[in-house]
Length: 153
Image 1 (tube, rainbow, N blue to C red):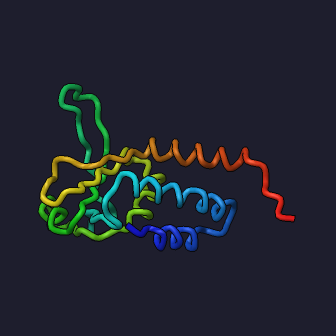
Image 2 (image 1 turned 90 degrees about the vertical axis):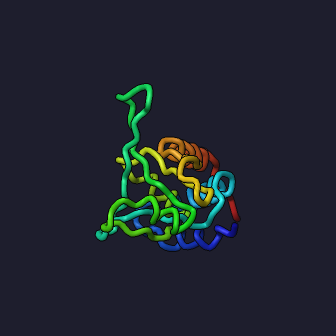
């Protein structure tokens, strides 16, 4: 799985204001490592409405009805995505995995992305939570801030 072009695109397209370029240079390799360790594919199909908004699904715990989480499903292939869609107003579009993980950081209503890795199996997958991802990013940014600057002179 060669994710380096996706990482480079994320870095190249980072907003130039503030410390964003430096932060993205720290975050992007972390996203690549996470994808390589936990996921199988370079892109996943995300169900979206015609306005481009992702389909959010609220899941409820079976034994604890008050416990809920909001997820986005990432499908390994187009057939599984279209098969799971219950609405003609939804389309399945491929999203590269690095930008997908990056967007998870900012999607406040979303608790996690469930990556359905096995074709035909819509019941099991790999979950990456926004909280877990945010903690990894905060740790990496803090480590970078506490590191002394490199003297290239």
